[in-house]
Length: 260
Ligand code: HEM
Image 1 (tube, rainbow, N blue to C red):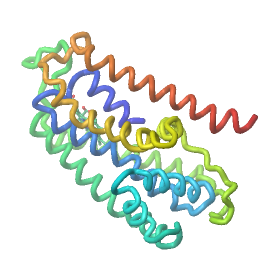
Image 2 (cartoon, rainbow, N blue to C red):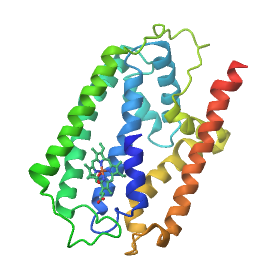
Image 3 (spheres, rainbow, N blue to C red):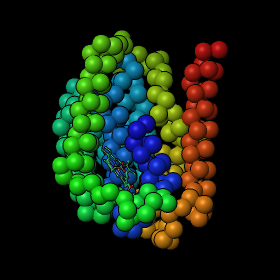
Image 4 (cartoon, helix red, strand yellow):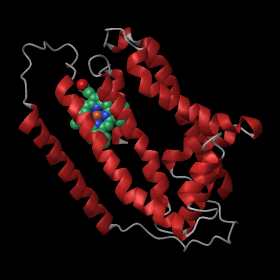
């Protein structure tokens, strides 16, 4: 949610524009880590929900043309989701993804340091006080990071997340309910059926990610004020509305209609 707000702010204020293109690009790459953390993390409790959600995701990954089948087999370490898959997901989740994420956050900060933050709209850049990147800015972010970590630590220690029933690969009657943040993706996959399924599982999500990555190179006008950038902000708002509608449809399908 915080990353979404941060992205929204950068989009509305046009702070992805030159010379800050690479700050935005590294930001989008960081955002793409979120689904990878979700996919690899969900299996780790080895409960019914995690196991069957993983099965659904692996079948979606398998359906990606070309590399899908190989990617799913590599993740699983065989044709079944068992102890090898659990070990692979664990190593990815606690070692490789955090390492890569940390690397990209460092690169994000590197570009922030060298390209500077965008001037706030309407302020006179000359009269604006300049704050040194190191130690002042870094210390502020570090303080925020430590506070958020402590608060999250206390929350997860005090309100321990519940375990579901242990994973039972023989119980295929279990239907996992998607988490709210993936409802729109699940819905996108189920809207397109048969030969069009590839649209929902690959083409639209990859196209959106590609568009987001290329945004600074598509919108190269020097204007940053939102009223002068409606050609970008209007389609972006339409995408947000579409995500919202798909999420509501997913919620109705998985939570309301199922219970009735
Ligand atoms: C782990 C995730 C992230 C961290 C820790 C992070 C951190 C930061 C920090 C500390 C700043 C400088 C202060 C600020 O403007 O808020 C910044 C700036 C920026 N970030 Fe991120 N960011 C993350 C993800 C993202 C994402 C997902 C995007 C968008 C796709 C993004 C795009 C930008 C842009 C364009 C700026 C420059 C803002 C400006 O010049 O006003 N970042 N980031």
